[in-house]
Amino acid sequence: MKIGFCGYRGMVGSVLMDRMLKEGDFKYFEPTFFSTSQAGGAGPDVGNGATVLENAKDIKALSAMDAIVSCQGGDFTKEIYPQLRQAGWKGYWIDAASTRRMEKDSIIVLDPVNMDVIKNGLKNGIKDYIGGNCTVSLMLMGIGVLFQKGLIEWMTSMTYQAASGAGAKNMRELVCQMGAVWNAAPELATNPASAILELDRKVQATIAGSDYPTANFGAPLAGSLIPWIDVPVDGGQTREEWKGFAETNKILGNDKPIPIDGLCVRIGAMRSHSQALTIKMTKDVPVDEIEGMIREYNEWVQLVPNNKEDTLKYLSPAAVSGTLKIPVGRIHKMRMGPEYVTMFTVGDQLLWGAAEPIRRMVRILLDK
Ligand code: NAP
View 1 (cartoon, rainbow, N blue to C red):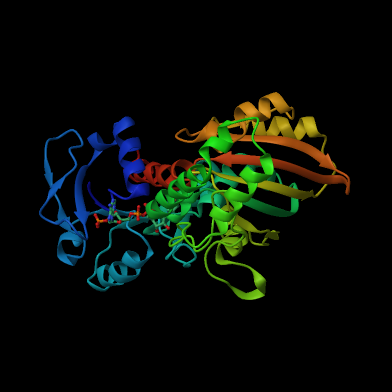
View 2 (spheres, protein in one colour):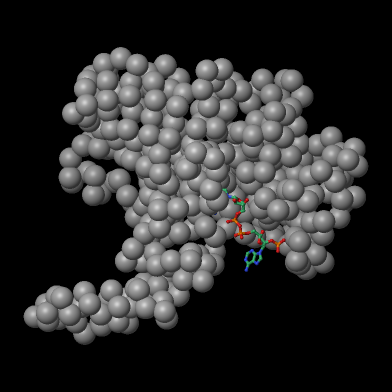
């Protein structure tokens, strides 16, 4: 099988390359690497020697592939995908961008949760397999079992999303903001005898000042937060918030959609998205049974006991970044009644939230 990779050097693409090398995926097919900006240059060596980059906008070269994996972004998909199909290309399109996610003839891939939907799609000749929104995929990797057992009547998800979800430039901007905070008053920060309000005033003046670097986020993130991600949609939501409802129900293949809603917030974590969930269950299930179902759901989920020590050790972006772990913790019943339960979950949005479902889809396609 010939598989083409577009966007392999971006953030999601590089994480995908790392994972594919680590899992030895490249020995099962013939890869070709494409770039929109560096065609003719040197491509990555994935074990068979040097490669030369093809032009990612060359429809003829792309059409020679049996499958194309794109981590290039939504604008690329919008421009190239229709041209490929119009040219008669019948290959598999595997994409990290959201452009084609909600199309009728595409499947959102998250195989530990919806392998049956994927297998059905392959049997029925579906050619487009798209990675889900990062927070949706991470949430389902942690608690999908509660949906699958029909235990969720409705759910809210309040997210705490890392800077890296907004791209490489935004990650740099966050670090520059952190540096500016430090530079505001290093001697006051390190001197326990100094007046705390003086430190506070200097830091606040820096964060709110016109020199604070905010070109990419449009507002301070380090020392603050931004309760808005993506563009507005109807009903007061942002598109990121709408995806929680639309994509979760599509991934699960629900005929009767389950209401899911909440606010998505950008916070000053570098990598890994977190979310606090409030669930109205369809019946009163004891906490230890809920914990048992989550613990056994898949090999990546990690049940974190609801105590301070384990929470601080295991349930944070710092604890999971760069790993495939999906910790779920803080699980307890709420004051509203016995059917109301809350919990907190974290995951690396570049791994299970983006690259890993795509990598695994390639293996499913190859039947390896
Ligand atoms: P990205 O880092 O901006 O990379 C996209 C492309 O930008 C690269 O493949 C590369 O293409 C080009 N590029 C230009 N300058 C570059 C440089 N200095 N270093 C590396 N690449 C450079 O995009 P991304 O964050 O990986 O996102 C790709 C897609 O995945 C998007 O649709 C996004 O919405 C989706 N996604 C992202 C995340 C996330 O957490 N970031 C999570 C889930 C889904 P050329 O080689 O053609 O120039």
